[in-house]
Image (cartoon, rainbow, N blue to C red; front, top):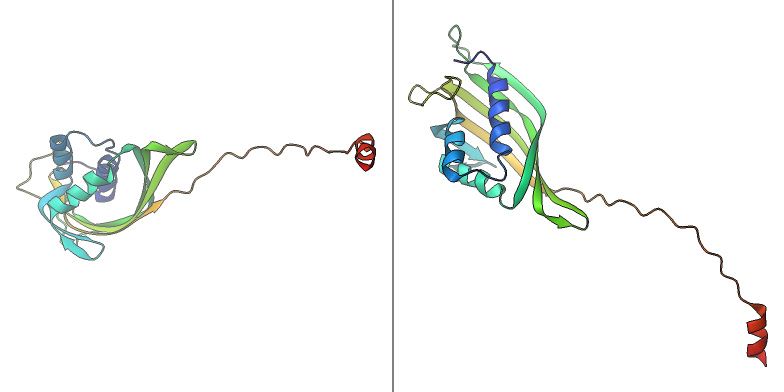
Length: 180
């Protein structure tokens, strides 16, 4: 089992999941997803229960037309399990993060971007029926509550430097011609 804390484990795994853009092959993404979530995880997304497969599909479709994504962690707290055995890495991890997805198309001169704001709470347990990951860990998320909101990123246009105003004068000789 890995020696890293549950919060660091979750941070590493979520960063891999959310930055998987453009999405890898479906089988590869499913394997990555199942290295994070238990197959019988309870998922509540925006106060609606959903299956783990539906949540995986939401993550996959969120990366449609995305050229790259980045995760900005805002806050992360860990609460160790009360019945924690020596060396066990279970507990609850909660926090917030923002996923910035850059699209393949452009708006004006820059890439279109979407911001996905997330606030979550995850219960992490050892899943004895799971295949160990590459580090030998059988940690998985068994309960997951997330509130998520998508927003368009503000468009920052490069300003055109102001040009000095040209002073226009009227040729008095032309005015005299028009009076005649």
